[in-house]
Image (cartoon, rainbow, N blue to C red; front, side, top):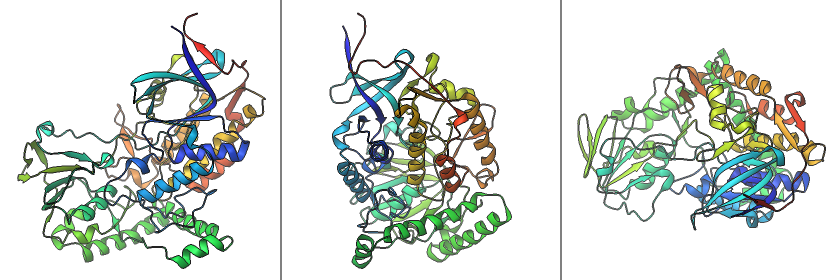
Length: 514
């Protein structure tokens, strides 16, 4: 039986910050709107739609954690919460007419390059009907994100627990924590936001931690009506604010370099953090909280009431090693902790990309096989893979930043890809592919520069994975400053790309046997 495949010139996996940014820039740059977005969830927004745990908010100022081409003068706080960020994205998508180009509850399972048609063929699962359908496009973009799938909970006996186990990325608001004994695993950025926001409801909260983080005082503030009026009506006010925040955050990039100025910078902020923890947290927890590694080795945390909440009588902080989960609680090496609810703030699977999508390029090679040849996930300028023509990743390998807004990186990646495809848009070619040698050069450069940073100074971090030969592989964070990344995205090295021509197929295809 023949199977129909619809066609759009562009297709995008995901409808979060990356996908929406792509849709807007295609319209602004090239007046192109022949695009379809495939989103596995029932709403746009990506991370900021999925993340609904108590206290969920961004830790980068809203003026910078937004599109440069679509400033929002109405932010209510310096650090927007998840609902405000989701509404911002919905407003942008609505303004540019992108919502009706989105297919929700559509999980892209396979993308295969069809050389003779110069197209990508997508196999998509409709999560409502559980049936598959097909789509074809000339250009395929992935906006699937860096942190997608929650990290598993591999403690023995977890399946025997009689109460709910909730992961922060899949928060269940139907679970009532009032009067409950809660055990929370984790102490990263998410845990620090959750603890003070659920503590008052619980009978007792036990937080089990495995590592330490440098915690800094919060700079979050409400943005008053006068400031909002100025941002809305004073010409250039939004630009000046964004530029000031950008320059300040970018100055912190020196914290990662193993130079004398970098060392002094880290020492200064370590003193600020240690002083804050010692003055704010109970003395009995100082040794559990203050790290023994340099600041910058792991992502720093801005406090949102967490450290002060450690004084609460119904909270216990412990680093006891967990041995087993039982139906009514958690057994540790030093005792037993009663629990009605378990909350996991243990993060996401990292160093994995295109999660759940089988990407098949030229010669039948998959992205997984491609990355195995390199030693780990990587991409030329964080966006392109040789042998996978007309395919670009937004927020791909090495897109993370430890000091500034990821939206800057996403915009740079989008703009870079749109510059690279311009000869195809102009009809001079139908296929663009990054050269293998260029990708190898870029990948080697990223790994080498990573070894010259504080990230290699000894802490255990989700920035890296350990390869089969025991080496560290960085596929998460960019060792370049965002100024450097912006500059190299502004001026593509054309010698690193190859362009070719294929004949186009009709707009509607019949796929299958004749």
